[in-house]
Length: 298
Image (cartoon, rainbow, N blue to C red):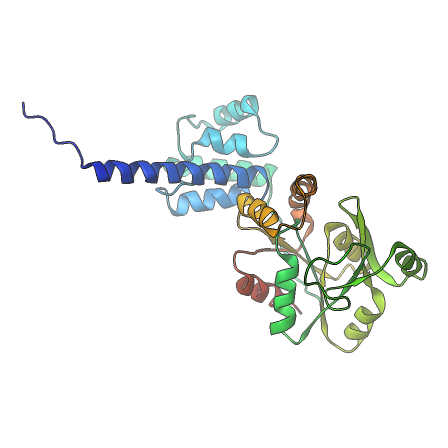
């Protein structure tokens, strides 16, 4: 019998590289589900739209254990209840299995549904380093019909930040005075270190004049605004992936290692709160994300 020819070396190298890339993408997708950057349902949509993709080649066992609060024992019970083999990949699930898995997730982990009503008061929040300030600045520069609120803060300016344009930089005594005078629509201590707040008077004046106002604030502040102004439209800005969020935080270079670790812990908590918001926008590119946020105004 003639010996079968071996594939060219270059093909084996290319195939190996592709396999490594797919494994990395699958690992990234599992991390995104675990960190709540994407919902399990979103990963299923990607898998079923392209069964040959990294999402489609993800094993059902790895998919389920990536979901927060599902360990191996619970995973095995779920697979038994749904009559799905543990060797199955998401893209290879049958039509009945897809329906049952979708129903299971929708019943236990329902995706938030946006509100029908909208307001001229837009609130933009999201995890640390997701790019809220950059998206808000793009809206300010390209959507003159929307007024960007300037927050007060007790932290020091970062390189390039201008007082009165990026923030009002105040000391603790002045911040205490603003709180005592009820001059802040919302305020909060962020990362257990510095206080941020939104001056109330400019917001009230702009809304009274018929303008749309955008608040770029943290999660605590967004909750306070929802309490003070229930009709406000709350928008949660998401990173394209957890790895991208980490890269942005490290690449920013404005925090030391201890501060970065603290902010990443906070980011995990913040991502888990996205269900409290009316809309979610992915900051994959700043112009696209800014346009989507601006379009949510009343």
